[in-house]
Length: 210
Ligand SMILES: [Zn+2]
Image (cartoon, rainbow, N blue to C red; front, top):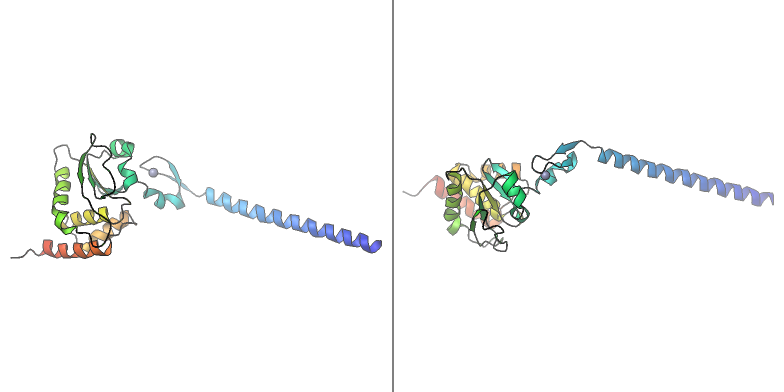
């Protein structure tokens, strides 16, 4: 009997230890959570929401990116956000570079649509001058327009057109234009076919044939 009692008491002690141990584990993860959620908060200048600092950069890709004070680069989600377009950034012109994305507010903005697919065999060379003319028209308009250039994700098609603008009109090299755009919108990246065409265009624009 004494043996059985001793066993029962050992088992009770073991269970007690387990409880204490798991209580500590829970406490630790709560502590970690607390730390995570007490991370400094930054107010997003665009939507005025308080964003945890470690999530701030990824939050910014929710918004159209300000490449120049009047030139924005974004995604489909920005193109259909009327409040952001009209009230927060006062867009006047929209250059839609995605064949599959509709022009959402034809009564509110001046549109141009480029029926581009995000494939490396797509030809941007033939339509780039026309696209850049539309951007310049917005910039030089009497009311000092602001333009959103967008595709579906704001990664390849629209960033290629914005980079083309920076090369031709701001006289940047392809590399400098790309790194300027990426410093503001890190997900921007022309596909390999667009990059090749942009590098050829850069040569044409920098050293015109005599
Ligand atoms: Zn925001």
